[in-house]
Image (cartoon, rainbow, N blue to C red):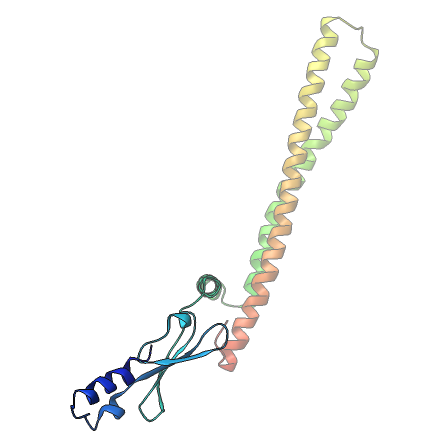
Length: 214
């Protein structure tokens, strides 16, 4: 381990002069193993493979610190941190793009409300039309079911009536499903407009105060 003292002893035994700069040029490596024991020498001890290595000058002054290699847990943590940072950057870039589109689409906050209401009215007209179509279908279904209750079983007329009842129920179900979908579409439009309006006002407020969006 301590090769430098041995080397100096050999030089002295051979009667060679020890250079005056030898002490200054010596770089001693100091480290502490997992058991807390300190090791010194011109090379780092094998016991310190998971520890920081401190390089000392011949005068005992720290000249360099070699960090211990990262553990598997530390490497995994770094990868997680890197992935989270990249994901955060992607979200920020996506939000910035949405903000630019929002500001480019609307010139004033009232525009958001106007477009929202126009879309809602258009959808409402579709719902009203579907409701108007449903009313006679439901009336017809009631009438056919009453006829079926008094019709002679097994006859062709009764069979045709049952077929018509099934088709009418299917038509009613399709219209009701379409109306329900339109109602959900209205809810989505209201929610989106509310989100856009809130963000639009935030961006305008930040712009007026000179604060960058985030």
